[in-house]
Image 1: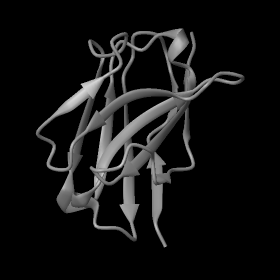
Image 2: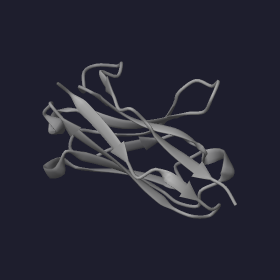
Image 3: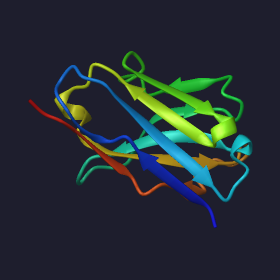
Length: 119
């Protein structure tokens, strides 16, 4: 049974930082492309960042690349999202996702973690 478990969400003031983690089990983590998505209430889920199986390549939403960094530790089956200079509009639920490299659609989703940016 595959599980993706996010952690690290919470409340932070504008300008602050958070580091999200997503730990996978039940799959060969190093064989999966990992991504972070986010979704605001009533809106579509949007891609935040993606990282290849060995971490050699990353890609970001244009509006977020200056502030967010995705990384992974295959030895710990974990993908991270470092979020800096957080803004009020970053207040959404963040999800991690996994897919094998030759697939386009996500195979597995985490349950999501809430990030709240408020003063």
